[in-house]
Length: 286
Image (cartoon, rainbow, N blue to C red; front, side, top):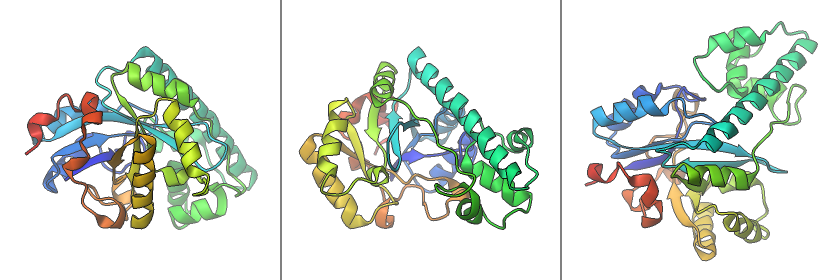
């Protein structure tokens, strides 16, 4: 098995980067990509751990892209030499996250909850703080019983403490990933919230910006939807990837090395189009 989409505690996963590698190795994975949200902070630790564990490691990232509906996340796979332009985009996203977090905390306080941004930031050892962390903070303060309750009552879109999140221009993100030696891949396309009838046209426009791959296989979609996404993606010219979007204990429904329908992710997804991302991986393959 392999996995081309995972998260560590450097963003919103529950395992440290090295613990994530150990967990993957214990479950028989041969290749793993770490794709934390809007940060490269966990890559060095994970790479060192992967060398020791005998796992092929792909350094990556998951970037938030400006999108009018749903969510547009872009994976960058194979970031062996992150470019200054990528660092600049990450700095922009993290600054916008901080402002968003402050806005959410202010809204929570307006509802009578005694919350503090510094307390929130000190509670987590992460370079990227987002709504999942705020939800866990609310659980720890006993304002809600569960993370899901925090979202349902306060943090989800349309709820009283939601704040809009800024993203990157797609062309800028694609260019920065490629300058870093990486390959841009559209993550979990169902989250774009585009009707099936319009999806081929939208995907074609995304392909034309330079996005090369599409994560057709993701546990957030049904198997039949994944097959349809794969067929559509191939017709347009994308290569196909698969991931678990593993977050550890925080998303127990996501199993490392497995995708939609709990299907194991096979190394057949390491296609020639991913060649730039596989520089240090081949020696670990059977």
